[in-house]
Structure formats: structure tokens, C-alpha cells
Image (cartoon, rainbow, N blue to C red):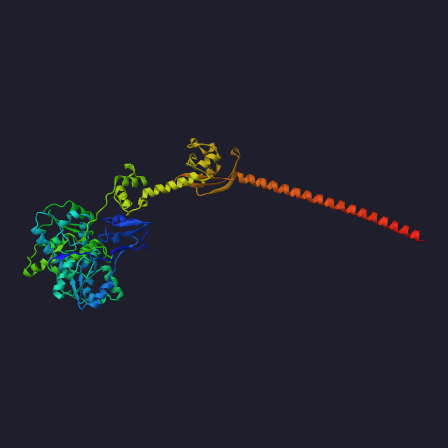
Length: 586
């Protein structure tokens, strides 16, 4: 029965931890579909536009981009289901060292999984189904569908090519269907791999095709740590089933066509294994009838998955995958490109791997944007002229025009343009200098005037015509000459300029790297005059006070003398009166 995709994802797979976001725009630059919205310096993932490829997670230097963690969900499945299977992606052989590969099944059983299988089992059937479809449709291009990021990219951003998607489920889903046929329909399936997009893909399926939980290798290692499971202390053991053919090579470029027997020789012009966004994009856009395109979104395929343990490089992971396949299959990849024909039971099973992609995901529809609106944004950022449109890509968009469109769509901010922000900063500095009430002059290494602000011109009664001439035309160059001998020195003093009736507090310093000298003149003439007037007023006040005091003392002395004389006269008169009275009585 064909599988039907239905989008059931309720929570975003990738999101931003705002506490770590530092407004570097790197996620915008690396996101292949520009599913990032910048607002107030914070980058957020636009879930409807996101294809969950994980590029931003891998590239964010601050680890601000992260993805949904589902260990608790996996733990609950083990507790609530009688049979819970771990489907381990074939790329595990590159992410885990050789000594851990043999012990990994035992470590997974300690977590509670009752069945441990390699997803390569599903990859084998997915490759056979893909090969059957391609052989039946030789007159059109075929885009293999093992990579969920590619499938969602085509459906959202290249809808015209969606009809060329091979209608076959991915190895993960094929393995889930196989496991339920083998172990029962109530079996819970947990997929573990390096891919974040698988979390999104798992939300598309139900019934026997459902994948109940998806974990990354990072999550698995963290789970081991939380449960205090040391892989080195686990015994060596085997998986519970063995994949067929060359399916262990499935995570690498060409793995699908090699497993399905579609590649007849390594340099086959009609068989195009590609990895990395740009190569995938070009291959899809340039596809032609009869070509088989096997696209993997990550560089070097799943070897470059964004959610490995981070200790191995892509090429080291690739080597590990190849060596594991070689050891297990006892053959060198490429020695034999033939694939056995599926038997009757396998053909019956392959019929269950068909999927309908037509209406699974709606394409991104961009609204019409007028040329006037685009021109307005370009003018606002100083890019109205063609020669000012640098297309430097620093903002994250390849051209200034695309950045303008993103601003209109609410995905970008004008301030993301570094040349624009720099120009604004320079204009603000220039504005500060131009409007400063203090005189500012800049001299070159020969003490010729390079520039001056309006306040300087007013103080020293000159014009821009003096530019290029020695500063000695206006004032004594002695402080600047001292700086030439010691550029690290800073001169801070008060100087008078009688020719201009000026008294200034001055600051002179050098710019060694630019070989320039700066002079800043603060006019304190009025303050000096006011201080002189104040000192004179103080002197006059003290003098007048002294004069007043002396007058008061003289007056007091005069009054005292007068009082003394009057008292003597009164005493003499009283004595005479008393003598006269005594005479009359006698």
C-alpha cells in the first residue's frame, strides 16, 4: 500500500537560543534557503521556510542555533512499548571508532532497546525500489529521495522539479516498515543518526511507516552519559539483523545508485551523485531526461551530518564508513557493481515503499514586490547607484537587490549591510566634529592643515582656503613640533592667542598610524574675562569695605571725644551749681 505524507510536526525542529545569539549574521550567510529572520539583532528560524538541513546548527560559532532534543521521548517509548527497536544509521561506522562499533549494540541494549538493527537494511530495499522506478521512467530525470532535506527543498523551493522526485520512501522509513512486518505493528521505532532533517521527516508518516522518535548521535552520547553507560565497558556483540549488498555505503555520494545497481561505471554521465547545497541546486536545475540524480544535502553526504559527535572530520567519517562496509562485506567497493535481482517476497515488500510527494509540502510562494519598493530600500541604504551595489555578501545575501527584497519581506534589516552601517558611523563622527563648539584642526606629518571644523574657522578667523598650508600661518606650531619628537605625548594646557583675542584650553595629540596630529581648542576667553572682572570686583569690594571700616572707626573716635568733652562740661556746671547753692544757704 503506498504511503501518504502528512505533515504532523507541531514544534519547530531548529530554533535559536537567544541568550547566545550575537548578531553576527553567520546563520543568514550559510542558510541555503534564507530561512532566517533578523529582528533587533536577533536571528530566529522561520519554521515554514526551514528545511531542517542543520547547516546553521553546524556553522553557528556561538552555538546559538540548536535543535529539538527527544531523549525523553525515546526513554518513554522504551517504558511503554513491549518492543522498541533502535534503527542505527549506516554512517555510525564513521562517527564511532572501530573499538566502539562492536560494543555499540550492547550499550544500546543497556538503554532498554529490545532489538538493534542497521538502517542499511531499509537502505537496501529503498535502493531496489528506486532502481525499479528509474528503469520504468527512462525518459525523464529522476531525483532520488533518501535525503529529507533535499526532498523538502525541492517541494518548497523548486516545485517544478517536484514531479521528478522518485516516489520511494527513505531508508529510515523503509526500515520502519520492514521492522513492523518482522516484529509486529505495535513495535516502536527509534532512529539514530547524524541528521537533524530526519526529525522533520519523521513527522510526515503514520501507520506502519511511522518513526516514533529520531535521535542524533549527539543525543545518544548524552544519553549514555546520563545513564552512566561506558561503551568501553560493554561486551562485543552483533546487530540483530544484517543488511544486504552495498547498502552500508548508502550515506555516501553514490551509495543509493551503487546499492540499486544503477551505476554501470563510475564515470556515468547519466548517473549524478552530488552533495552540498550548491551542487544539489545545480544538478536539479540542469537535469535532463534519463539522468539519475542522487542528491545529499550535506557535504560528502551523511558523513558531513550536522549532529555527529563533532570529533571526526567529514573525510575521516567517510573513510570509516568505507572501511566498515569493506570489512563486513569482504569486498572492495566498486569491484562489483552488480546487484542481485529481488526475489518474489522482496518484490512484494518493495511495493509498500511507494510514497506520494505531490501535495505533502506546499511550495513557498513569494509575494510580488514592486521595483519602486526595491529601489526605495536601495536608496535608504545608499545603494541607489549601480556602482554602490557591492554585492559583497557580508549581510548574508548574495546581492544587494536580494537583501532589499528580504528587508521588504521582513526577513532582514537595513543595518545588516556592513558598508551602510560603516558609512552611518562615519557620518555620525563627522557630524559630531562638524557641530562641536570646540575648534578642531587636523594636520599631516608636515604640519600642513588637512581639515578643520567650523568652530576652528570661527576662532581663528579663517576659511577652508587655508587647508594645505602650514599651521604656522595661523598659530605657533611649537606644541605640534613637540609631538613630532614624541608622538605618544599628550599636551594639555592653557594658551593665549593675543592676535585673535583668544584664551584657549588646548589638547594636542598624535595619530601615529595615520601620521597625523590633532588639535582641540576650547575657548575660555569669556570665562577668563569674567574671572578678571570678578577679581576686580572682589578687590573693589574689599577696598570699599576697608574704607567704610576706617570711617566708622574715625566716627566712633569723634563721638567718643565729643561725649567726653560734654561730660566734663556737665560735671563742671553741676559742681558750680552745687557750690552756689551752699553759699546761699550759709
